[in-house]
Image 1 (cartoon, rainbow, N blue to C red):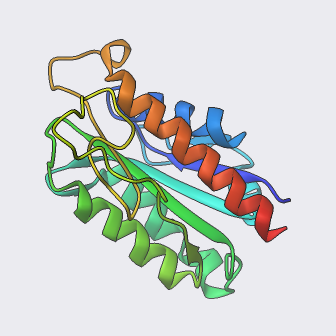
Image 2: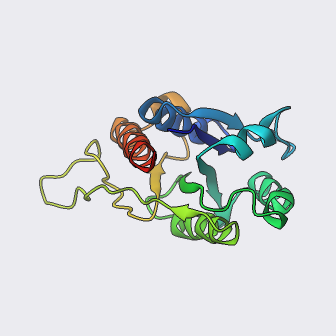
Length: 183
């Protein structure tokens, strides 16, 4: 089994908490995109060597942060030589509203992965959509294309919804299982 690399940007720390929870579930390695949109030294090599790349960004104004977009634009170099072809890909996003147009951010990630000829992995999680469901249930936000989490705009990263972090760990476990099954 190859490595799982989680490349993400976090503006206020909430998306970083989600990335950490996905890493807990997947045994993935974190690469944080800096506030200037740059990757740390050696990150491109880690991405090239990974068998799965998981993308994460907050949803701002209906899409990923400009810092993530800067990384995505810079990925045209590995795109040109198809270095990421047939790698597994997945994604996650966080915003302050329950919807917040998070699906647009996930679609951005899917499109980026498809341009790189990658293979997309969804959540594989059933939604918590019964009357008895609570905000702390797994996949309460009910996303299938990728992980969606919600953090109230006045909540610190330490006040994130426990169910969302549990969902992020479950998503990470799914990613590890799919990556392992692929060999």
